[in-house]
Length: 231
Image 1 (tube, rainbow, N blue to C red):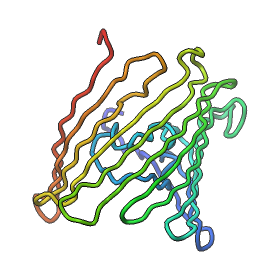
Image 2 (image 1 turned 180 degrees about the vertical axis):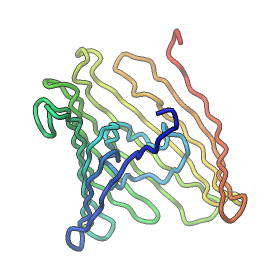
Image 3 (image 1 turned 90 degrees about the vertical axis):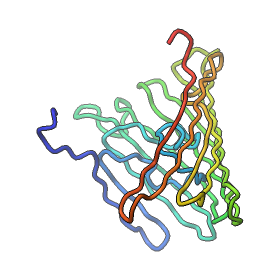
Image 4 (image 1 turned 60 degrees about the vertical axis):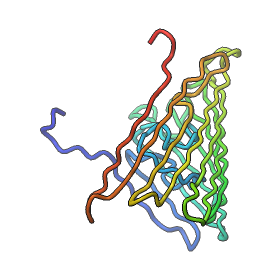
C-alpha cells in the first residue's frame, strides 16, 4: 500500500502428527510446501526452478492452504496438498469455492530420486484442470560431474476446446555444486505450458552463485525466452 504499512506475505503453522507425519496449515503459503519433488537444480528464476512441475505442485497464490507428508523411511514419502480460494459466501471445500488438491509419491536418496505428482485445480463451479508431473534427478558422488534434473508435466485444460485441451511442460537442468568457489547451473525448458496446437515457448538460463563473504552470496543470472508470434 504505497510502502507506508507493514504487510505479512504469509504465515503458517507446522506440527508433527506422530513420528512419521508432518502437517501444516497456512495463510499465503503454497499448498505444496511439504512436497519432496525429485529435483536438485537450484536456479534463481521462478520459471525453471519449478523443474517442470509447473502446475501439479500447487502454488495458486490463494489465501488458505494445508498439507501433510508421511515418511515411510528408506527414502519413500507420500504427500498431500490443498489450496482454497473461498470468501465469506463461498467458503472452503464447497461447490461455489475454487479448490485445488494435489498428491505426490517420491523416492529420494543422496544420489538419485524420482517423484510423481498429480493435481486437480477447479477453475469454475463446473470445470477443472488436471495435471500430472514426473521428476527425476541423478547426482554423482564424483567431483566435477554435474547433477542432472529432469521434469515432464502433462495436463488437460477443462475450459479449452477438445482440440486444445492438452498441455505439456518439460525441463532439463545441470548443476555443478563445486565449480570454483560457487555453484554453476544451466537449464532449458518451456516457460509456459505448450498447448496441443500452440507454439513451444522455450526458456534458457545460466547462473553462478558464489559467496562474497561469510554472510553474503551473490547469484548473477542470464536467461533468454522465446516469445509468442506477434509479441
